[in-house]
Image 1 (cartoon, helix red, strand yellow):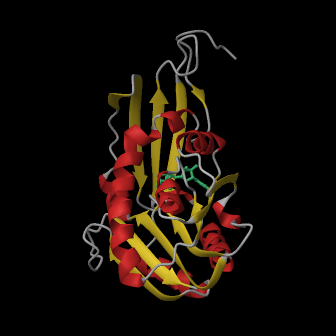
Image 2 (cartoon, rainbow, N blue to C red):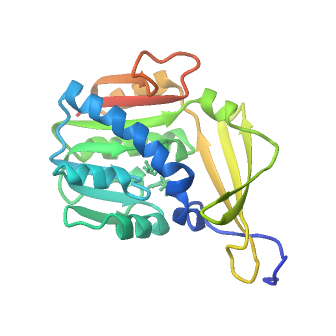
Length: 254
Ligand SMILES: C[S@@+](CC[C@H](N)C(=O)[O-])C[C@H]1O[C@@H](n2cnc3c(N)ncnc32)[C@H](O)[C@@H]1O
């Protein structure tokens, strides 16, 4: 393979190089929204945060927040790069970081809360995998425990896709983004080129995929997985979801 400067970008897994700039790109802003909603709903639903699984924890901002409030947190992600950043930024004796696929969550002890923030569940590209993930979340809960997650809607992913290429800079890294929406498959593809990230002037390319799932379908899957009292809200304001809801927030109980 030609790896000289100016060669074609080489492909790396999603969230590998971008792990180092994720917080500046989206993580910090997403965390602020999550924190505001979580704290409002924590008291509204009396969510017990004694023992938490933070699934697809990314750079660990929610895990750190929960640990600061006294929770014992089992934080998992599929990406070793994200886990490395999480571990470096948010060490602490109350958080254990483990590489684990969210379809097969297996905490070492059963938890009072499963949190899965910032559209991580949209990363599951088939319905069976979505069902597997919910079943493993349910099996990880103590009786009466809760699951708390948010997801991008088709409206958000469709509106957010733009076939033109965007060039910008994050933390001194030059990037180029291009996105595409497939109406039939309800899938969103973000192709991200990070300039000069591969050494010797080489660019790297990450492809991030998301799929939109209908609100009603997700509620059905929650019931099917054995959850009760499931509720869906618009993450902007916590009201009833509408056709133009961009992010859905779900709470359900084991
Ligand atoms: C948009 S980020 C959200 C990260 C974090 N939850 C947050 O709120 O910032 C999506 C995360 O899901 C992780 N992910 C994707 N597929 C996964 C899977 N099958 N199992 C576990 N983590 C996964 C990615 O590695 C990435 O860290």
